[in-house]
Image (tube, rainbow, N blue to C red; front, side, top):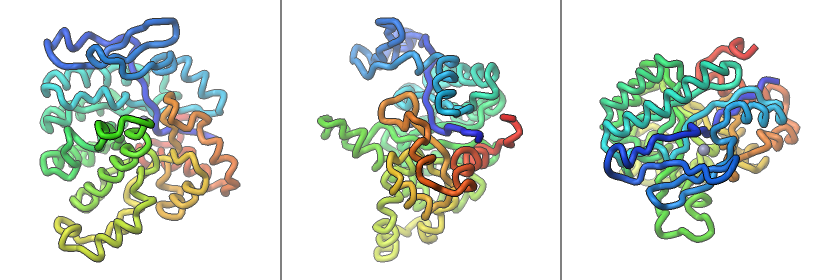
Length: 335
Ligand SMILES: [Zn+2]
């Protein structure tokens, strides 16, 4: 069966030294300190070590073959967003990353689909690069769960979402710049606690801010099965019902109305939770995802889904149908 991994990250093997070029800022650069590994450095600070499968396209294809998975939807690593930088510098950086992904998709069209990154700190430049992303063959863009701490319902971002709808570009919302990060460094809590909260923050902001209401054709996928949004939906709905004076101030449509209006990926690491997500949003809105090649990902590419005894239609929706619909691609492309 065709398997499309809707959530994976990739980075070029060589990055320009942007801090030197632009003369400020802790832009990410890579130190290839030993064979097959590189250190991602933020200024002089070590961020994380990555392996060759973070940049080597052919190695990735071989690793995926072990899990009978043909297609990877690739996007950059969120720390590369650089929304904090000067807009034109972020545009240049975004173009570099987007061209790299476009080249990959052109070279291996049966194995890769691409999502670009945008200088979201400047909506005009973001739309300009969005249009270019479409021209160079990307299916959509990945954006952060907040933009320099601003929520996605902020009016300044609306033209970008509007352009995504108009151009038919899909959107992946990925947690980053995690709330509370500085206050809970121990135990990897930003990844375990803040990331799911970030994604719920993004979904709630977009629902309550009326983004889905105003743009019914916008196709958005939320990482990590929507983070803590679905597990806390009862509370969110109850809040909407009991305190509309606080919650329903910009959009008076019930949050549950939007359950089948966006996609989430399958990264739950838990069959019980995936069953719950299935009940809420249905198989047509759950895309197989892994977060490959990072350790917190589902690195067996949906093996736990294969073991859940789901009916064939449900599995084929999750393994490719939902992703094809989200990205608006015919299945024939991968025949
Ligand atoms: Zn990810």
